[in-house]
Image (tube, rainbow, N blue to C red):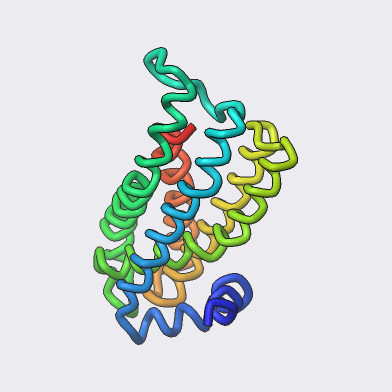
Length: 192
């Protein structure tokens, strides 16, 4: 089941988008996002804490970096869901007027993001853990790698907006880029 899902998301997204147009898969999207954020917290974030890896960005307010890393393990999941919710709202507001096929509701925007921000992340979890174990978990490696993953997630989102909702290609690409930009900004506010 999971193998087929990953195949659809990474290599045949139009098949996934056809299903998203026809069915309400919000519960699946929510489950996948909970899995994404909690798995990262329990693997990557715990490893970063134990390895005392360099921070990707400076810790604010002079907080002890190790204490901040420990806090991140618990805050990562809820904050990740908040990030996806904020992005879904922005996409729904700015995309709904241009949806020519299926109406773009908040629920549909969240569902699309839930799937599009899960597929490229899945291999990222494995690579992150591998890089950290090899001692390459510093900003010079992780930042370019994660920006690449966010770019893939943004392109999938644009393709989904175009395929599912009929949003014109230029607007869909702009909204896809906006998802990536918002993700990086919102993640950078708290995640180090």
